[in-house]
Picture 1 (cartoon, one colour):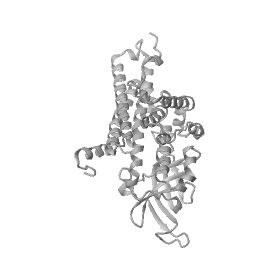
Picture 2 (picture 1 turned 60 degrees about the vertical axis):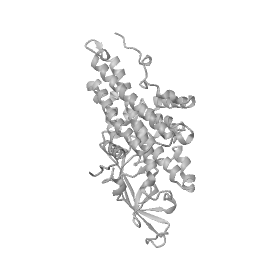
Picture 3 (picture 1 turned 90 degrees about the vertical axis):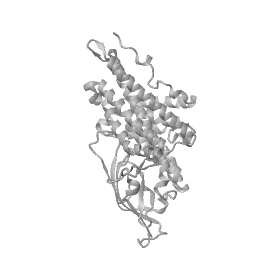
Picture 4 (picture 1 turned 135 degrees about the vertical axis):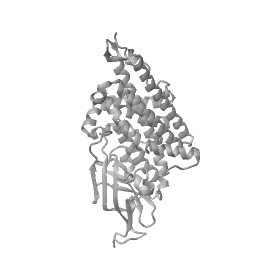
Length: 402
């Protein structure tokens, strides 16, 4: 029995969500796919195995002009599908992209002064400089809003003494799990003001004296992403590099909500990838003299994977519609992130099962997809934290710490 041509079979986008895009957006998405197929797909497994970041492709990635797509006039649906397509080919590259563009560049747009934008925005948008978002700490992840220990003290550069009107800030503390942290040129550092306890944001040159960075080793997910432990020891940052638009942690919520949406889109990309790989394997792999796809249980697993993927795409298309209306609140976004993370986990597990023993080696892609899903399940709010955000919204009762 000859294997059918995969190109002749229905796409994983079974309900044609992509058809909701305009012609220009569909063409741009096709351009992105061509880039990923030529520059990323053949090499992503090797980068992952070696835990190396492909800095050499950044100029070509920048040439696609996809930084903060919604600010370039693209739809929110298109912006989400960009992240899904990147994730479909390499979750690590998609994670780099959203950390740099949806957190670093977007922060400059949202909170940067005119001078900060003039100095950094064009280079950051075109990837001539790279950025990180330094929020999470060694002892504070989900509770970092209230438990932040990194401190900022304002001083006079002339005397070195505390001065509410001083022109220098001194940072002390530590951050952990900072994506792009080992190689970034700048990082957005969040710290608590010693004077009044408010949360401040700073643009920190990563080469300043007192900044120490070390790569987090031995990861089983997102190995290409260069996560770092960062320590700040009396790091002096000029007042000109403080985000004047940030006065409390509340000011960051819009930013974090948007990045959580993009991570929810990553759950879609993971499932698209798992279905792609599992279906091709089931069609081409023979056991007992027949393709795996001939067996009823394999078809049932593939259909479940497809159903999860289509449902996830539909929910995220709904989020994009709410974004267009300015109505995508954190409870809606948290439901998408938590629920779709669970569907993603089921989908990639089924895919790994279909590949059998080959599902645990990166040669066949599925092991990488399976492992990377665990990081998505946790970051930008764990499954549990996002679930409790939704629970609080629908009951009016907070169960955090309960």
